[in-house]
Length: 104
Length: 489
Image 1 (cartoon, rainbow over the protein chains, first blue to last red):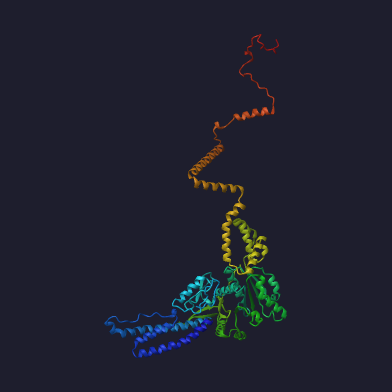
Image 2: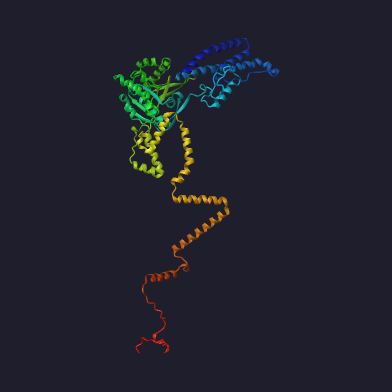
């Protein structure tokens, strides 16, 4: 099926961008730049078609002093929960497209 | 502003200098939906659409089950595509089924015919052997002009191998012009055992079913479906599994490692179908019914007269006429119709030849005509004299009721009273309870007298008082001229 051929080709193209985001994500986390890591995670999510996108929790924000103290911790918690979500969605999307291709 | 083209109203068709605005999408959508041009904007939902559906099936035990099936593998989708092509393309759809003996070509043919019948389409099915292909004139002559046909050419392998060039070109020409000769839509199904067992021109059809795969065929398929060899190889694997292991399975999700496992013939087998250039799998059960495949019917109708009698009793003349139409539609023999209806049929066939006919419009307009002319027609042609009188009095009643309701009520009461009186008198007469005063005897006597006078029957009327004896008769005084002269003294 022609459409699925195109999707397979698109997956290859998109893999490059995802890898770029992943490299940025790893670098940002290694340097405790969680704000950038959250941004890259959102970028990875946005690349998926709308129906395949995961739903993220609300991004941590600061409204009072206590939030500021706990900010880094809350950002890490957010990444720990939501980053695997986007990786899972990408994998599932590629698998389901492959399954559809096998279905003919 | 440069107007590149204009329509009849001198309105710009497209503007070369137009800029795309923020609301361009909405503007285009409004324009397209407003002018009903046959162009619409749609959002592609391919990714979101679930690609599984269910197939209703009755098990050997008689239980109803819903079997999960990928939508693209569902045979009904393929049959709908065949019908759509037949409707939209101009009336000719060719189908080739390639497969070894016993792989399921006939099963697929029956399934296609059955589904077309289930979808409410009335195609006349004509089945021929492959050798009949060379007598294409006879095949066409056996068809009913103006009626959609499915022509099945079973086992058409190598038929044209030894045919003369002239016969082959004649057949090729006939197949391309068959829809013009039949003057209706035609679906031609050709079954062959091997992809190269038929000349390229004839196997070049829009729908190709690949029912089996062998090493030799694999090479031929390589030529035909170069870009889809992945699918062909996958089919080879499934085909082998289907006939050696007794099952075949397809992935639901390789991410979760879940598969659907189908047992062979319970109820499906699997084949490949190329719709135009789109090659995909199709599941096919063995499904048919007595209507579309009467040759294998176990039900025998014994008494036709009883059946027709039932139709006559229930629906009368119209029921019998509809029966004739049903016979025509099923058999394709137009002589089953009364001559008047044959002429109407021919008329619409000729109209259809001149261009695409919108049957929805025709039916709607026909209904309108029937509603508008029903009263007029029935009043002039179908009402008897007494029915007309009744109808006229009903109309008078309605008029009077509207004009002067009091008079109307009074008249109705009087009529009821009179009717009651009549009924009472009738009952009295039956029971012998009539009032003696009501019996008029005198006129009867009078009638007798009149009769006597009329017929001049001589009768002496004795006016002598009955209570007087002869002895008591007093003689009249003498000299008065009243003496009895008959006396003997």
